[in-house]
Image (cartoon, rainbow, N blue to C red; front, side):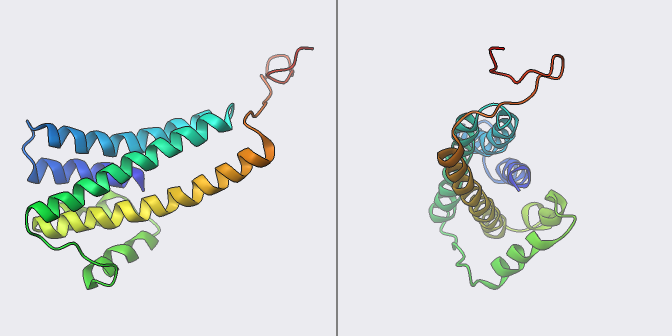
Length: 166
């Protein structure tokens, strides 16, 4: 989902925010940070749960920043922020269940619709991604508290565990 948010935010910003503005860059970077920190956290999971937890938390914070930016955009432009019961918001949320979900699933809402629809689509996508990240963070926190912060794995070459002194 974070990759979809990144692609959608980039297209949205390119369509509706001056590319030379700091606002454009900040919003695209917040989306990128969300995506990249999830990937980096996943890579770190093999060696440090603490690092994984931290990076997923940074991703969540970056997407929250992007969400606030989208809401600011709507407010500043005098556009409506849809509630969860808005008919189009419901349609967009249902797309999350598509088995082949990708940016292409949401493309028409981001690339063809007016700013209100595009921004609210992005809001829906961010909410869905944040929901998933919140679940992941809860699981990571529980595992960290239960099992500790380091995960030892085999190096492969000498079958010693990483961290073993023998």
